[in-house]
Length: 581
Image (cartoon, rainbow, N blue to C red; front, top):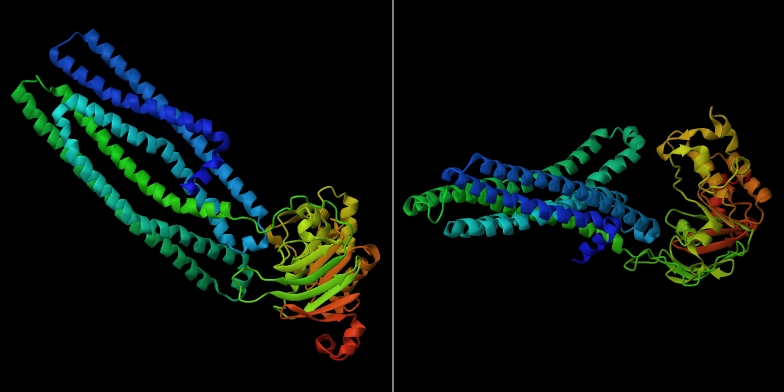
């Protein structure tokens, strides 16, 4: 119930349509139950031979009740659709805002495919279940209570048939629902794998085609799809037993009422029960059994959707590991950085620290190069600066203040990070660049692009800065994408600029021109460059060599060459003993 309450908190401004749905459902049920009651009196009056005018009045009364019932049903449908769609909208928005507040460590707990499934399939399930709940889950029990009450009023002892039929039907429906539930629950977990297969295939389409692995990907997708089909088939095959069980109970009820009722009419000559009452009993019997059928459907649907409710609640319950301080610092003084006794691991259960024994001091305006092999935690180190992750031990200070004491937006506005995986969004080049500064003028955009060595290739496009970038930046090269990302980062006018292997796809000449531009035009900005090429960091004020999650060497190019360590070995391997250009 706690999970259900969390979901219903998103109802918000759609509480009124929900209440109106319930009101109109009550009206619809009352009128539907009233019609057989009126019909029974009409049948008995016809048998007695009453005047036609009297029958017309009863007929008009029935038509009026039917029209009102129809109107109540239509209004209930309208308001239930409005309420359920509104709940889905609010719930999806709440989930999206929650995901936006997650740190990298929170996002690591959920795969992208899983989050997409939760925000689409799972929310759709909850939407449908909510609509059914406020309509059928209210309508069916009310119909059952009203109909069985009227059946005992109208039929007397004849209504005892329901004492036999109802327990049999309830037992059968509950058994069927319980048997089907495990298969339904399994389906939603498998949707994640299906979406993951689609996502990976679309993102890696070039790799798939390059290795001619289309058949393998089709087979993988087919297997995931077949698993879902088998589970749904198994569940639906079990649920399909509802229909024959329902038919059995309906026909038993009809035979019982007709047989016993006819005997009572003949034996008592219509004194205790008449044709009209039998007609009403037949109708009430259908209403009672159909309401039980609907309740069983609701039971199945709610059990199915509860798995979705739990998955949605997991996202809503996830507490961001990075939170705002109570009294945040709202200004970053300068770009100085200091790591003190820093250790970090990605989760509490991690076998070892990703970083340890990190002590590092960087003055504002310095250019710092970071080298190291794959898995040496270079990227992890710089991600601690803008609080993409928080340290496990020690502290990281920017501008002399612990990063945990800053307002997060203030800190991240002062630190521009160009990550290894360059992300360009669909839209024009100009729109993408304004992600760095939405108020940037055309002149500022051109200046940043010149500094990032992107202006010339942008102007080679027919539409220049209004050129449209396809989703994922598929219509620009890797080097062009990197330079656009650097320009976007520069538009923030950051106090700290971090390039995480962000010039790997550009040639050495362009790389050198970008670094020269940094020295000339943004001397006060602290620049941290993670690279694989020694040439990209050789002119840095400080070069750090990382290995196994710690700093093993540091110094200038000349100092590190004199140490005859990892840096010198890397330098000689890349330059083959030649002079560095």
